[in-house]
Image (cartoon, rainbow, N blue to C red):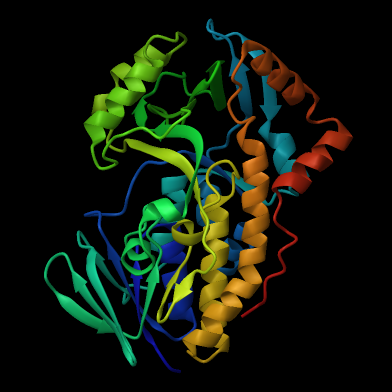
Length: 394
């Protein structure tokens, strides 16, 4: 096997899935992660489709089933918390033939991380500052000052990928902004431990809260912005102030939730964007997950697609016996057309994600009420299922 020593930048869903399969296929992966420990936080995700198949092949379905939030309903409420429309999660799981979970993104990442063999080297609290490609490998300098050589380098470091910036150029040339910002964090329980995903809308803004344990709730906020905001995405206090400015005075439970925000251990805030690239690879470096194919939360499938992309990349490298040029080319041929389609579906959905008028909120609620009619339920599954992607058994 050629090119066995591989550095993965990022210990998120894509990076840990990739490390799992590379090790399974006979390679020697190392992970470097900027954060000092496994990242917490992130919103709830619906986990199904081809990502479910990858998880099954990793034998982690029992752990994911244990982490399932057991959500009963998605309920849209008015300012006085009165029910306006709802979506039954049990019916959704039935439509998916039981092959679906509702998970915190951080719980999915934790399950994958805990499935890794103990002999995989993981470097926390460091990041790549310089990349030098050579005919026989990649020389990497870390922010800590350490320098190491690897055969290949895989960037699995998310929407704001450091590897992509160092190798392919500035983020702006690849980012497509969709006019939204989102935030999530956990607080002391304010939902009475009911298994409902409560969602409140005013024009251009949406807030939600749902119970995750007996004494903690998770939150989700999203709001529209015609232009990108100017702030440092590492500046948590600036992000919190943006969120307060947007939601503190709109009613419902928002002021109460935001009053608990400073005690949250897992605050998350980011732009809703896609990353669109003509090519994902350059020399001995390639990208995976949100670093190259971010469909954004508009798709509802970013985490599952990250797992699928990682599985295909590792599998193609195995089939090519470590020939990275062949593997990278096949990885893109198999997966990129599918991602292009998913990104287009998400783009089409962008304008309707958060209603911009009171009429839009009323109409969205009407659609939710009609969703489980036989015809519309089939449309729903067709729109969001990714079983049309036929994966190899590597």
